[in-house]
Image (cartoon, rainbow, N blue to C red; front, side, top):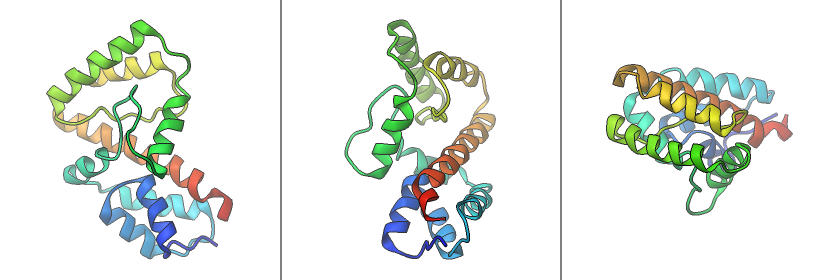
Length: 162
């Protein structure tokens, strides 16, 4: 049984997806019989993320290719996720940094992508593809990436409780 009513659980929910409405709704929806039930509830609540909530959540994520500043669970998770990108590749890393700048100028927010399971070249390819999106389509893609990140993080943060 996964109890989401405790302060510790709410902190972990915030690390999974830093959107106050989502944390409250998922937290109040518990207890959950399994991590699968928790993830399903999280996905259902994240299905309706607004553009303001996208911006709220992105504030908890570092630029891809950069280390998060500070400490806490969210920072540790970001570091772990980006740590799986493989060895640094000067040309690819420079292209990602340039792409991040262009993305931020074009869309007004940090480029957000699920890093888990991808390498640096795949991240660059995704960044370059998404730079061609119009703002509405890009917001939808960024929200989808948040949902994928949240699901992975919920499993990592609560998986041992079910």
